[in-house]
Image 1 (spheres, chains in turn red, blue):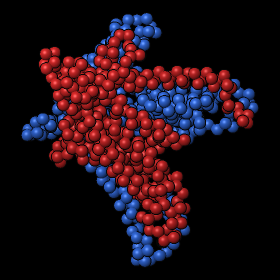
Image 2 (cartoon, rainbow over the protein chains, first blue to last red; image 1 turned 90 degrees about the horizontal axis):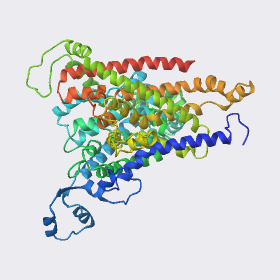
Image 3 (cartoon, rainbow over the protein chains, first blue to last red; image 1 turned 120 degrees about the vertical axis):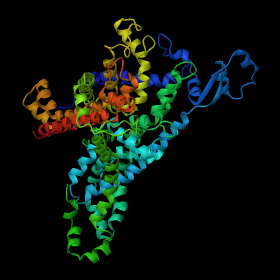
Length: 312
Length: 319
């Protein structure tokens, strides 16, 4: 390697590495604790001192997906033998399964609303970003700033009239309403990010295509879209993560049918008190996909979180 | 960047072609396509953002209550605004918000910059560790905030245990979210844990944007490392740092999900940030007119502060 004034000595590197790795381990602790708690029994979860080593159990996950009732020992003895392992697990606790919980429903809602809004957002966002990038649009800078400014409003502040509007339109607590709302919230992100990605594609490609007799539309989807594929994919993942994590609108505008997982997970309770292993299990399943996506996205992370203001 | 399309040979050709032939050959005109592409986005944003904003402004001058829709709506002028600005509770809320804003930003900038500086020393595996550090930032604040209440439990909570382990205090003797003095710090700690990576990533981009030759030139001039740090590194990272502060400032001014799950605004009103207060007024007390005025004040504050800040940022960038 050639000499560079900026190349740190190996001792500096070693020291810097140690501090960063220590920080990483500390910062990872709460997340590891969520995953670990999900596999604990409720006694182990609230043990003192906190248990790092424990015998893993699927109890938290079973409790997450079921509702149970407590029965006394005589009634329990009179029941037929449990047919499945999870029924046995619940009975060992002096309970019987009363039915499925609403977790899978809420999880499915998160998937429907997340993917629905992402798809719509990409459709609208790509088109708008292309137009902003390539055409002379009157008041372009003002429009772009307007699109960005929609992000500055506190969600609770906009929630009042949206609550009224949804009530009048029959959109409250519906999937469609939430999809439209999240699409609008994410449009600022997708337009700004995608405009940046499309700006980077040389305009000469399209000009060549136009000379070859392509129409604008053909040039758009045969030349620009394939070139912007990586950008579109990473923007889509960002929109998905934001919709997936959103809480404020979800808690105010949904209750029964369209409620997503974030407002639901904190309300999980067991038989007689907060069931932390079940909460942790629910959180683990809900957070895992985002962790995977974050690792996939790591090259575009910076760009996404700054709305394209900082590109590496 | 602008008018890119009009400079190409195609455009010049197109301009000299009569419209009737041009439209046949090229389909819709560029202008029509531009509008078809942009209109849906603008329409949706008008419907979901601007229309509600105008509605909020209108409501803020009335005494409307959502839970009494049949009552006559009275025009009350600026009375809602007057009430908010003279209410001592509002100012207590503002104070809690200011405490939260200032400390989260200070801590996140200090820790975030230090981490970025160390990662930029390019030790082996720094990419992998960066990704690990970034994880908390991408997760659902409500779900994570809810779990932090578990970490903060007296005695059994991991946080209390670790603090007790290092300080020798009794882990059952303090409750981070139950104590009026500790609760404001509980939310600062959780937010700092979550968002420090954000500042770190932006600082890292800033540090990496500084070309090596500047340091080499400084080295030739025999500038000390200390001097290089203050006259090269800091000024060149400053615009990035300011951008990070802008983002964190706006986001934390809007803060709702993490804190509402952690403390719910309590104990008392010690962690009632403006968004939480607004939610109570609007969706628990159902004072729609009053809370609309509140929302307008918040929006004007964010927008005003952000605009001033962006001007300052641009000045720093120009330097």
